Amino acid sequence: MAASRLVRALAMGLCSAALLAPPAARSIETIRLRLPLLETDFLIRVSELRSPAALLAGDSDLAELDRATNGVIGQKLKAVLQSNLPLELKAVLLNANGSPLLEQVLLLVGALGDIDGLPEPIEPAQFHRALELAAAKGGISLLDVLENLPGESVTVELGRLGYSLQRFRAQRRQAEQLIAALPAVSSKGPWLEAGKFASASRELKIDVAHRPEPLAVVIWEPAAGAAAPDRLVVISHGLWDDPRNFEGWAAHLASHGYTVALPRHPGSDQSQQRAMLSGKQPPPKPAELALRPKDVSAVIDAAAQGQLNFRRPVNTKAVLVAGHSWGATTALQLAGARPTSTRMRKLCDDLRHPWRNLSWVLQCNFVGSADSAALADPRVVAAVAVSPPMRLLFDVDSAKGMGAPVLVVSGSNDWVVPPGPEAIEPVGRAVRTTSEGHRLVLVEGGTHFNLRSSLTTGGGPLRGLILAWFSAASQAPAGSPPQLPPDGWGSSTMPLRDVTKHLPEPANQP
Picture 1 (cartoon, rainbow, N blue to C red):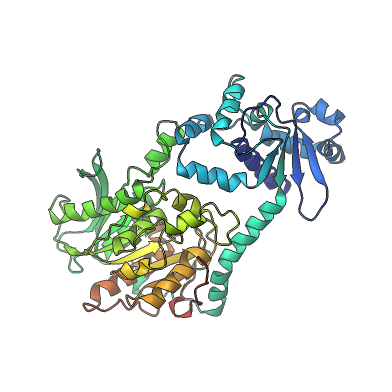
Picture 2 (cartoon, rainbow, N blue to C red; picture 1 turned 180 degrees about the vertical axis):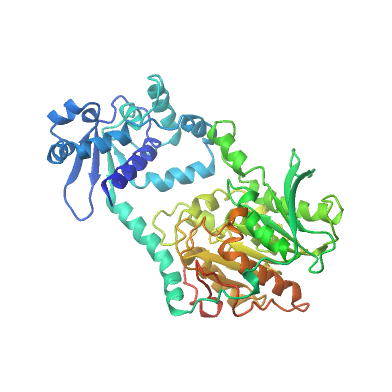
């Protein structure tokens, strides 16, 4: 790890460790970096970071290293520790206090280090006192917070960081092996080309019974008089995202004759994120797990009742749904997957579980709402779930309730929702326990965010795959699963592979 990244990792660990501190008389005086496999710590004195003269005359390991590097190391550390923290930090923490989402963040990052000399249990609310004391000086830097924290020293275990990195790599290894063993799907075919229909977009709002405010919906549709398909596609965005990041998918589908609706989920979209960062709202509430699929069902209802003013009739009894990240989880719910808190109650506090990943922070936020969030919509006949957090949220029997076939897509380089625990293992179980034709496609080089497509990217690497899957679902005989074409829907920039028939036996773990 480069020096600057090491410093930033240290800063993150310290900021999170700060969240764990109860009130006491003494304040943090030293920072210790504990290196794996070594019997010595790297000592930094907080007081030496206040001025070059103090560091030059200091006797800590940092002071010696600073002198040996002609001040380079010390300046880098000071630049990070003395930079002001975001002004919104205090408001966010105050509004998030008691939130399961915040508790999971603290649990995850707090495991990287310890504040020495403090009794347990440690409450995250204690950090507010240190912030208030630091804020009295004006801008709040990490160093200001450290000087107002109780305790004797902060110890950051770099070995724990190393363990986390090894775990994340292991969670991607199965995907890498599958990709290496199979040829990529051809990217030469009609699925990637724009269709023959001109299309246009507009935005409107509809009243919904389950939310106090109207629901905004972006509509993409082909020109009037377009021939079949007469299918409606609804696309659900992810956490703190926006429909415009998926208009590339929508425009591509509309050019081939599909009518596409993209609801903006108000409890977890970009505007909610801005409100949260300004201290006006708490993080997304666990109740959003059930509200999001209700948003999609309300869009289908509005289409059936003529409220969306489509240019041509659409079949609202056989709807196609796509989603990304949390939106992909929403698509799974609508397809019939039943959320449950059973696995979350067992694993959310297990910091050493080999399948633990960043998406568990979000999934564990739903521990109190999962059991009442089942909302299958029988009008949904097929779904695409791109990078769905699902390993904790849906148990091994959830796939049995999915009456609609689902195409799951996962990126090989996704660190947020890694392919091993969140795609390969769950889809492997679903394929072995159902006959609905569920499939898994891996994207070589895909991350959590580069699989989306704004309008300017022309549909991105998944446009051909999504079109081919929905076309297969639209043409499949009643009671038969869709047959994804063998080629022509790949990508020239990010190779795609259908690994469904090559999935390993699911691991025998809870």
